[in-house]
Amino acid sequence: MLNIIIFGPPGSGKGTQSAFLVEKYNLQHLSTGDMLRQEIADNTELGKSVKLIMESGKLVSDDVVIKMIGNRIAQKPANTQGFIFDGFPRTVQQAQALDNLLQTQNLKIAAVLLLQVSEEAIIERLLLRAKAQGRTDDTPEIIKARLKEYHDKTAPVAEYYTQQNKAHYIGGNKSINVISKEIFDIIDNAL
Ligand code: AP5
Ligand code: MG
Image (cartoon, rainbow, N blue to C red; front, side, top):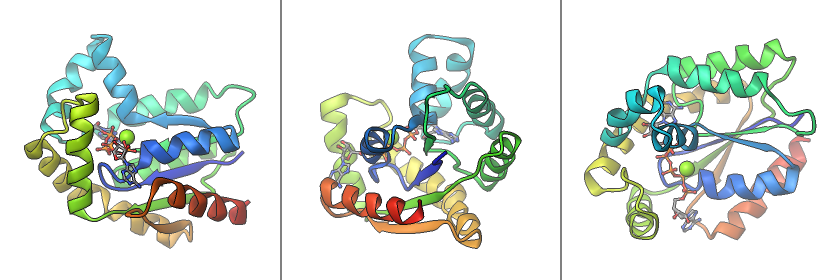
C-alpha cells in the first residue's frame, strides 16, 4: 500500500495534485475538507455542528476529523492501492492519531509532500477560485483567518514528519504540470 500525505497552506494545490495522484497510482482520496463540506451540504448533525467553524476559517476539533478518517481507513476498499490524505493531519495531535490508526491495519505513511507557495500567490488563487466555484471560505477576511490557523497549528506538523525522514519539500509556485512531474519523481523514488 502506498499511503501519501499532501500537505500545505490553503490554496497550495493539495486538491489539484491529489487528482493526478489518484489517477496515476490508483489511490483513494481522503480530503477532510471535502468530507466536511459534504456533511454541510447534506445538512447532517455533524454538518450543522461544523458549519460556523468552517465559515470562520478556524480548524474544526481534532476529535471530529480523527473519527472521520478512522472510519474511512477501517472501510478501506479491497482494490485500493493506498490513501492520499489531503488536508489531514493539520495538527500534531492529528498526525499522532493517524500513525496509530494506520498501525492498527499494519500500514504506514510512505511520503509527505509539502507544497510551498507564497502568500501572494495563495490569495490570488483563492480569490480567483471564489469567482469560479463560490467556496464560502474564499473571501479575503476568511483566507486571512485560514492562513493564521495554518501558521499557528498546522505548520508545526511538518517538523513531525521531518523527524521521521518522510518530508519532501516542493516549490508550489510553478505550473501545475511541472509540480505533478516533480511529485511523481519523488513517489517513484520512494517506492
Ligand atoms: P480544506 O478544504 O482542506 O481547505 P484548505 O486547506 O484551506 O485548502 P484548499 O482546499 O483551499 O486548497 P488546496 O491546497 O486544496 O488547493 P487547490 O488544489 O484547491 O479545509 C477547509 C476547512 O475545513 C478548514 O478551514 C477547516 O475549517 C476544515 N478542516 C478541513 N480539514 C481539517 C482538519 N484536518 N482539521 C481541522 N479542520 C479541518 O488549489 C487552489 C486553487 O489554485 C484552484 O483554483 C486551483 O485550480 C489553483 N491552482 C492549483 N495549483 C496551481 C498552480 N500550480 N498554479 C496556479 N494555480 C493553481
Ligand atoms: Mg482542497
